[in-house]
Length: 478
Image (cartoon, rainbow, N blue to C red; front, side, top):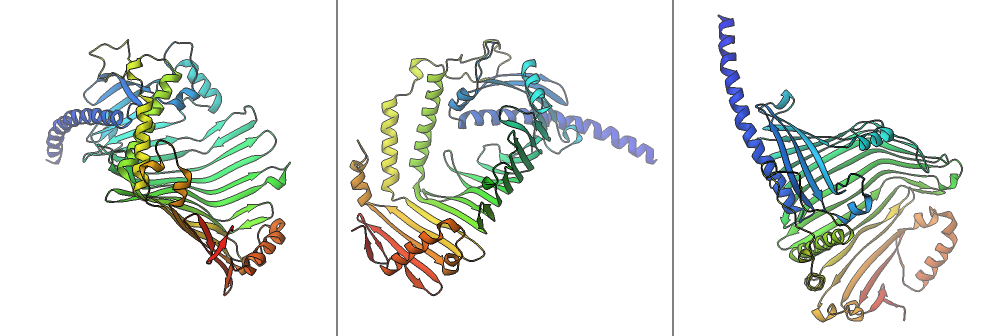
């Protein structure tokens, strides 16, 4: 009886699973097409899909997609090949398995394994350089509820000696990006054990515990808010032939945080570290944190669009390339044809320049703010800290157009800054070669009232207004 029930269950499940696979395969194809369309749209002309050629089966599909990437940086990095194929054309190969359990290795409507299609010569170069023709592996899982998961994997790679390098070791890594179909939201994180670069002079650069994390939410056009944080657990440079150049740093963090309130955006830049050693200097922590606030998002988005137009025109000026895949038939290609490189497509430089000028005026007329949130360092003996704020107000178009009027703009800047130094830090200054001169200067400033003593600290309040600078109310510079 139990065997009969099992057989009946199997007979029922198999067609249900096959039916689900067929339906999910159709949905996956639609979703992939939406992602490609959205990617082209948001690239503003940088990325074009030239052709898609697919070989479909019931449970899977294999496809090749040819892209054209029109970006000046690519032109600088790549050289013309002997094959005659444009160097900015790339073909990727996708092996797609459909759900509900694609390849029984994940859950979703489909799982896509992507690889770059290489020539035999390119494979040979990669194998000679790093020992494999697949230094990166790409996997995409199309979820059930509009989310897409994109994963990048890299094995341990050993780069062979070349030029001034005696060889390098990339210890592998992994990154995962999750985003919505409309690309309006995104989360990502990644980690890698480290990288070692050896010089032929015996020097060595080493970075360990590399991390990246972030979350982004579209706010206006191509402007996103959220955070992007990059971290290095430890960094060190050693050179036995020049020990005075040795140095190290721990817990290095660099990144951005942004937020929006109504039509305005705030962007903060973070550049911090833990312990730093270099020559005779030993610091406990360093900080270089600053930001920009009250930025009009409409003006920012327009400036970014102008920047992209200039980039595309730079590519066209540097390279001549065909605009379509002449080998693809109408049935094989699902491409949207890229714009041609005719003179009719060239940007109007004067028009773009005028638009940039208008956007800069609009940005400054909304009184943007620049902040020094935390600049300084700490040792085991004390802390030096600087923070401040600068605003630009009452800007009119004549201050910017047709030419910048520096005296007028400077007169409209109002800025303050506060400096604080622990006396114990002064007594044990971490850069011994400068300690004598530094103490003399501080003594002179204190005697003039430009620095005042508050308990165990020396402090100064600086103010810039209407072209004049004061320190603790005392004028500077006559």
